[in-house]
Amino acid sequence: MPKSVRLDIITPEKLFYRGEIELVIARTLFGDEGFMANHTWACKLLATGELWIQEAGSKDFRIAAISGGFIDIKEKFTIFTDAAEWPEDIDVERAKNSESKARELLKDSSRVGSGGKEIVEAKIDIMKAHTRMNVAVGGVRRKR
Amino acid sequence: MAGISMQDIKRRVKSVTSIEHITNAMKLVSAAKLRRAKVTFERTGEYFHFVTESIQDIFNGSADIPMKYIEGNREIKTTCYVVITSNKGLCGSFNSNVIKQAEAEIKADPEAPEIVAVGSRGRDYFARRGYDICSEYMLPPEDISFVETHDVSEPIIRQYEEGKIDEVVMIYTSFVSTLEQRVKIVRLLPFEIKRDLDAMPLEKQVEYEPSIEDVFNYLVPKYVEIMIYSAIVESATCEHAARRMAMENATDNANNMIADLTLFYNRARQAAITSEITEIVSGADALK
Image (cartoon, rainbow over all chains, first blue to last red):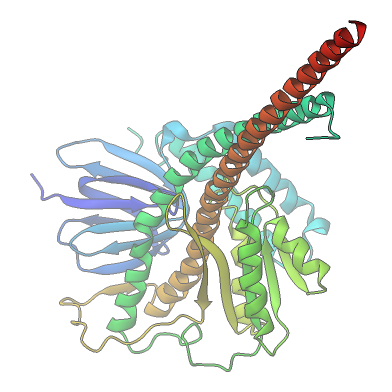
């Protein structure tokens, strides 16, 4: 059995998760990356995406949606994120709504203006909505 | 109690009683809200140290971090004051304490201040006195979420990066206990940090991704955001605690007043009865 390591997931509002895990897969800015016990010490920024957690002694993964943040890999793993959600807490309707709203904003370029900030925000909104919808149905990767 | 009729006293007792009902109800409501706010407040406080520790770690571990957030790298001209008050009154001296401190702080500053008002009480006060309020937020603080506080913190960080403001000072009420709250003045930016020479270098090399600057540049604004969020949550907790105390005092005062007035009422009634008896007796005497 692989070694396990303690993982804390912290949001500003609460301690989202704490437990012994074997493997956590997070989306860094350069792509998905898995971390196991005894990983090199690291401090990496995370993008909006899915987070896969394999708890110690378990074969299955738990999935959560997180929106950006960073992971701190030392003897313990700590993930700090603005917001995190388990699939059962995700309101798919709301995610769909926010996606269509962001898409409308992108289409209607006259409203967006030339600042570009709104475009970026709308794209992030779409990404967040996608992540949440994917997580709600069990994650987009490695569907079994 | 000459001059006040029994009818008048009765009316006053009635009105004080209804005020007592209201203040008592408000006290109970505030107590319930306080309990809830305290839970949120305690949760936010518990993990906050983690971000500061990470910043400290990076700072100690590396020489080439961007200096724009660090103290002593630029002259402080414009200061931005974040004043956190409540949206509602009837909470004793809660708001006036914050405002008093904030005003003293602002007056001591020779440069024109920028004021960010969180809560309508502070906004109204400073707007009336002709201060320039660069942004204001009137969200109900009880169930504010971290994402919502982005609206408060994002423009502050942006202005700081653009160089429009050189210092960010936050004035809010910090929670000591349910009976005691204290006004606190905290400087958010530039970040006060000292290179801890005694600190042990981390025993292993840490890998930063995308780069140490990016991680640092992510962490410091995040620190400001979290500080503002936790201050708003803390201030909301204090508001409820202050209101509960104020309403408890009001209820006590109302009860005292009712007791006094009831006493006056009984005396006045007794005096009326006595004088009636005297009149009857003297009338009967006169007939003899």
